[in-house]
Length: 191
Image (cartoon, rainbow, N blue to C red):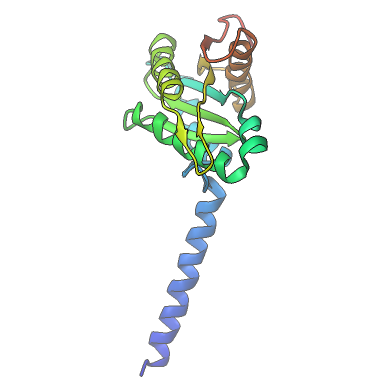
């Protein structure tokens, strides 16, 4: 049989595994299998600090699935979850190793693109927009066509997390207001 110390070790390892899983859940969105809002802000911190030094810019893109509520309401939350996983996978395919995708809330995602200017970031966003538009999602109940609206900005030296995210979100809302399924740059003068 097991000695007492072996049993103790097993219990300890199991506790460690559970703690690791809890810590992961705090920073990972388990539906889309990408970092959640908290995980995103943790990843963002070092890039916010770097933005205070002159050098290459870092871009932030916020995307929101157009009519995502309609999916949940019309086909149910399991279908909504399939859509979120599908979109996250499509977006990840467009990213480089250093880029990060996170889910903020609902059908809203954020992309952190280190060493990327606004123009280049808009091209990445445009590739994602096209991929989402041209790749319907197969769920148990239907093939669901999706589109997404994107807002693009770069981190500024005096940005706080809230101001940075607000600027990208405002550009994304401008994309929705302009007819959805498009990429908009934040105004240079915007707060």
